[in-house]
Amino acid sequence: MFDHIFIAVLIFTAFVCRENINVVSVVAIITFQLVIDQLAWPLMNLLPYFKFFLYIIAFGLIYYLQHDKLIYLILPVTILTALTEIYWQVTEYSGPQITWYVWLMISQLIVRHLLFIRVAIVDSYFSKQGVSINLDWVIYKLAALTVLVQAIMLLEYLARHLGDLSDLLMMYAAFPYIVQCIGTITIWVVFHESYKLLLPKLLKV
Image 1 (cartoon, rainbow, N blue to C red):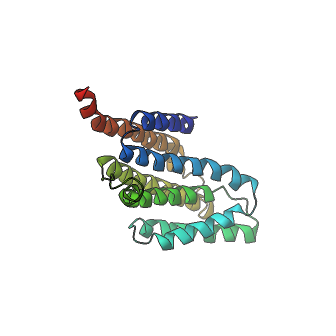
Image 2 (tube, helix red, strand yellow):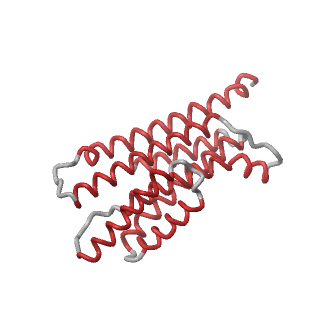
Image 3 (cartoon, rainbow, N blue to C red):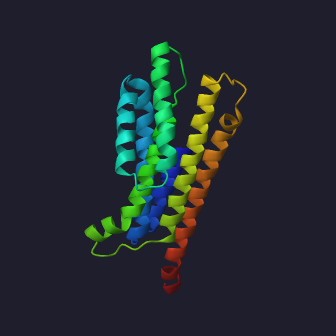
């Protein structure tokens, strides 16, 4: 439900700021990330081999986007998670759905890359109208925070199931609230930064 509200807010913001291609393009990147996450979850649960496909995508993107410093966190966690899933398959252990958290890290990595090249993309399609705005930087940092949260969640899962630490539920309990808090901050930032860019035009009117 929160994701649907989030997408609705983003679409509304894009409409209000439709004349500012920089705001619209940032909103488009965030919306794209939410949509692919919404598509990945059902496919992951319905198609038995989709996990394998996601790991191929994950390692491919990690290699392609190795310039991002977040790789130093994402790569070891993803390798450890992949090895754990192989171990669970071999031992026929009924483990939790941890591939989802790997995908969430990768989708945030995609967001950071798209934000990094956004100005160049806008310039190539809209005659040099692309400029870096503060919204780029804030969303870029929030994506890094989200990756950190997902990584901690994954490591806690692995510690709980591999280390027989069944009482280790601190991140598990806090996770929904942390993610929703980051989402709420993102909505506020999009509104706030968009309003700051829109305000001079409103004052002229």
